[in-house]
Image 1 (cartoon, rainbow, N blue to C red):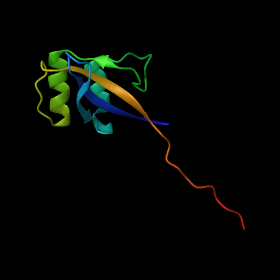
Image 2: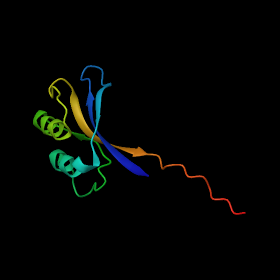
Image 3: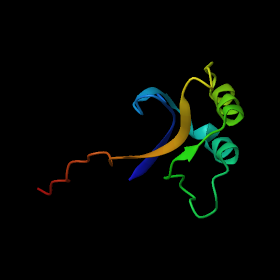
Image 4: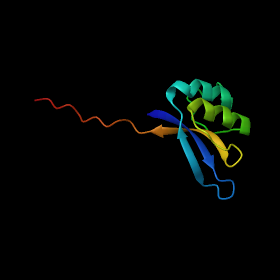
Length: 91
C-alpha cells in the first residue's frame, strides 16, 4: 500500500477540513524536516501539527500561498489502495 502526503488545513471553529494540498514526493524529505518527523515514523503516516512558520515554509516549498493563521495545518499521511491488477490467465 502506498502512502500519499498532504498539507491539510482544518477550520478551528468546526474542526472540518477546509483546505488540502498534495505534497509532491520530491518535497517529502523537506516536509519531514519542517514537521520534525521522528525516526520512529519513517513513512510519515502520522499527523503533524504545524506552527504558523512551519506552515508558511511548507506552503512555499509546494508553491501555494495561504494564510497560515486562518486554519490549523497538519502534514498528514494517507494510505492509498494498491492498484488493481487483473489476474493473469493461463491458456
